[in-house]
Amino acid sequence: MTLLSIVIPCYNEEEVIGETMRRLGAFCDGVQGLAVELIFVDDGSRDRTRDLLRGYATDDARIQVVGFARNFGHQIAVTAGIDAARGDAVVLIDADLQDPPEVVHEMVAKWREGYDVVYGTRTERPGESAFKLATARGFYRLLNRLSDVPIPLDTGDFRLMSRAVVDALKAMPERDRFVRGMVSWVGFRQTALPYRRAERFAGTSKYPLRKMLRFATDGILSFSIKPLQVSITLGLLAAALSMAGIAYALFLRIFTSIWVEGWTALMIAVLFIGGVQLICVGILGEYVGRIYNEVKRRPLYVVQEHIGALPHPAPRAPCP
Image (cartoon, rainbow, N blue to C red; front, side):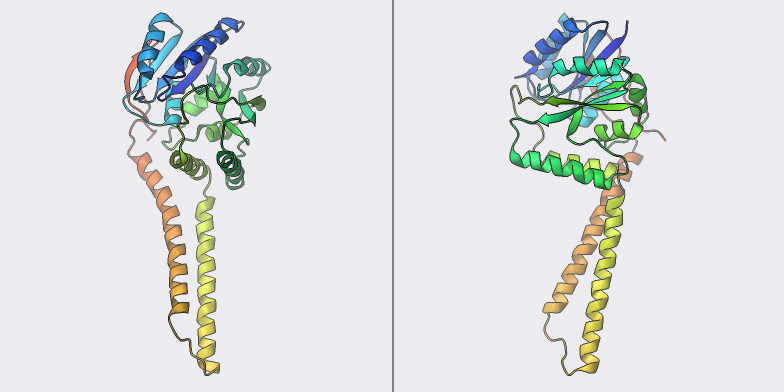
């Protein structure tokens, strides 16, 4: 029978995990013509999430739990679930129930029509602040302007992928991962599925402003070298302004009796050029730092325990 794998990354979700399990169980019981496996990836939770998952896995053979040795981050947890999935298709969904499990029925229908990727597009996002909505909207539009690969707007990681797409993702070992961008990059036949995103059933967001900024940086730097090109433009602009300032000072000195007095103009020029240089060095440093992380060739994650009947593949090391 055709197998569907559902990957659910979890981090401190004890308040919601019971309801998540109930609704996923209802989906499994209602789906037609598919066997389903549920792969929960515990991303180093500090609450009772793993203990609860361990109990569910003991009672239900469809459930696997991959427990990390520490918190590695959401995108790495998604990657570990993809590595463990054996299905002919794989669904990514968060445990907080903002992405309704019931929508997976529609994703499966689209997959049966021949699509390799069915990604959820959010038509409404209740419960989220105006600041988060505005920054998310701005980020995806900026990313599409910078990236050579079109990335669908207003989408998250909630999606279904065929085995061909999953195998392509598993061949991509980079550490600074932006999964939704990687899925766009591999191509294949993709389609959008509009849906209304729900409010969190319980608990709080695991993406504070600091993590959102880091995630946005990963998305931009992983799929574009245009920040480097922007730094070149800034450098040329600074050089042009500096030459204009030098020409102006020489003109005053040679052809007029006015000499450039004081330090204001000098300080403005020094601070401007110095600021541009620091920005350019910072951009360059981000790319160099990512190269440094890649060449260390550490595994993407460390599994402390694997709960369930199915064997868990060894963590991947980056390709030489």
